[in-house]
Amino acid sequence: MTTEFQDLFAFLAVVQAGGFREGARASGASASSLSEAVRRLETRLGVRLLNRTTRSVVPTEAGARLAERLVPALGEVEAALDVVNSFRDRPTGTLRLNVPATVARLVLPSIVTPFLKAYPEIRLEVIVEDSFVDMLAAGCDAGIRYDERLEQDMIAVPIGPRFQRFVTAASPGYLHERGRPGHPRDLLGHACLRGQFASGAMPAWEFERDGEVVRVDPTGPLIVRLGAAVDLAVAAAVSGLGVIHLFEEWLRPHLDSGALEPVLEPWWQTFTGPFLYYPGRRHLPAPLRAFVDFVRAR
Image (cartoon, rainbow, N blue to C red; front, side):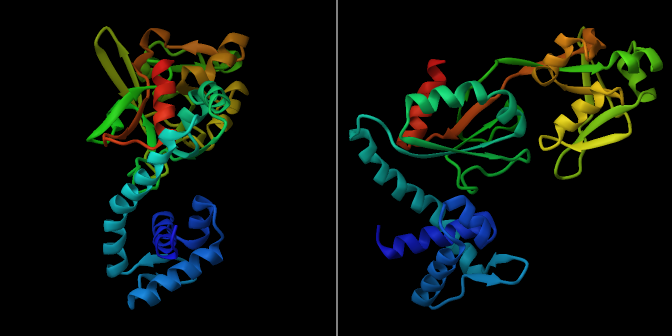
């Protein structure tokens, strides 16, 4: 690939990642090589593309316009080069997936290992983000999200369990001391272990029975970042600190062992499992096509 194209890819990596160090981690290049590439590009174009400070790297107006046009253009270049993959016996290259922590923890482990064993020349990069992002702008080939969070104009393929449940549980010691709630609203009088999104929002606990939906916003002694620190909340629940409300798969080992007991089981809500989603363009990169076919076959 010519130096000009390499510099354009380097510039886009820095913009999408929000900095040279972050861009280096995402692209596999060094921060110094990205900096030099951007400097060459600015010299060639005769215009500043990035405003650099000790704390941030932000595109100038010219840089933002250039990045906006480069995303689809360089995507087409990568797709054109990837056509060569169709002539190989085995697809090769990098597949970048953007997924929430729950998917990384509960869905991907049973898929990733057999997929990479079947396609040893593919490198899989999994970027875990619980906030909703523009998957393409983030430099990813595909994402996994739940249906209410799917981007428009995307193809969606079911992946993992088709139905999941949120379950509510507490330790036997806690229930002996505090009593067992009989209705979701009783949780307002209990110590509840809550999860919080990166934005600071805390999702309400939602329950459903015979068509009646109840949402409660209980309080408690512990709040953890969803995804990053959920295991801390699980450990606290097992230790008797309070009531937890979480994906069934996350709590199932503790329910089976008796370390946690189910609470409000008739009210547990069932919802549709996650989807792999990707752009509906005619040509897919070979690693993504292989992954889509693998998921469909399962």
